[in-house]
Length: 369
Image (spheres, one colour):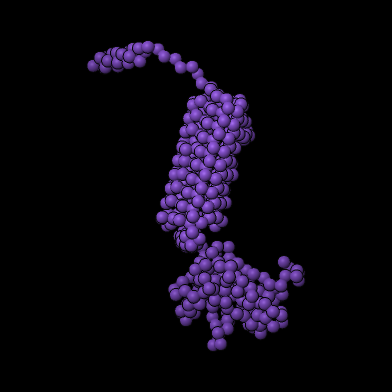
């Protein structure tokens, strides 16, 4: 900030270098430790990679001190042969940067201002400039295209998988599992093939995430089992030894210990008590077109298959909901609730219907002839 004398050092980072190692940043900043009148004016983070490449080159003098940074497009043949490249990350003595940044001249043909020109300015002013070589050169990989983004993502995934395996996470096919930067998984968790983690997932010890599941913003308790083909959306909180089965979607809902939703269900904005059992085809109708409403299912309740629970509604502890019911009112604990049309049977109707349709089809065929 202009005129802010409390700023001692200015660290410049690149927004397209997401994997830079914290240790390399710490080493770079530490290069400007010490009294201002005796420390370098600039420190540059460099790395070595074989030419040809599109990185700027770090040109050193015979004593190994940095003279200047040359952009690849402006380098001559000798400079392009240099394998010490600019990582794009620098730290400046803040007072020096404030005093000289306005002196930088634009470069044709685009009239761009190169911050890297401050290296030559510092040398001309008799100030020292140093290069810190990155301990993790791969972490300086930049992103300038979709192909670069895919390559950096692949590098990140490879590293995260190695970290997870080292921490005791079990993955039979780690190359098929995709992590977010903040995924937290305890030791002894089993992650089956083809699982995708979005941001904000935490998984406790002993849980099992089965194949083709997608988790985001979810917390999984110890010993819980998720999937296969499960989708956990933000706000899903799955308790110890709970079970979320195939083609079950959970959003902003809490499952108590041992609760189960085995298959084919949508549970949104809900609280499911311990050891409750949710049948196939059950949905919580949580949205009325204007607002979301909550469904509360008590401990030990049993929700029959193909039930629709129209929120706001509470199902008491131990209650049973008969299959195929649409529940719009609260259900008392240990009660049986049914809401379905009475079954009607008409003897012989199907046979008569088929005969009538067959006669109609034969009549049309005769007319066409």
